[in-house]
Amino acid sequence: MNQDYGIRAFQRQIEALYYDRDAARGVDRTFLWFVEEVGELAKELRRQPTDRERLQEEIGDVFAWLTTLASLLEIDLADAARRYADGCPKCAQTPCAC
Image (cartoon, rainbow, N blue to C red):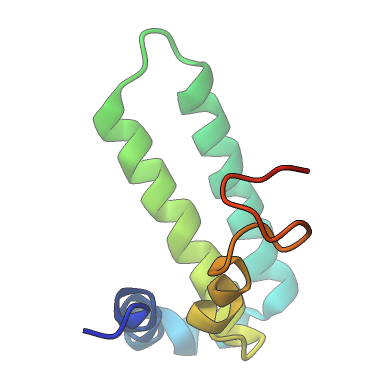
């Protein structure tokens, strides 16, 4: 199986679900939704004790909104992730040695 199939499949699914609505909202307002989701993730991270299920949901929401932004900006997330395929983009080491 292609290494980045999962990311591409996820991006296509998010596009099928939300692209028309997100495109109508525009990049600026979609970015605000993304930031709001990051804020919700931050709240969950600070909560003690942490709720793993809620953290997973919030991380999924952040990933979905980031995916939507990438699609609106015509960026393939699998291509963007490829930047890290050979290690740290700066030092090319795994783990990073910077």
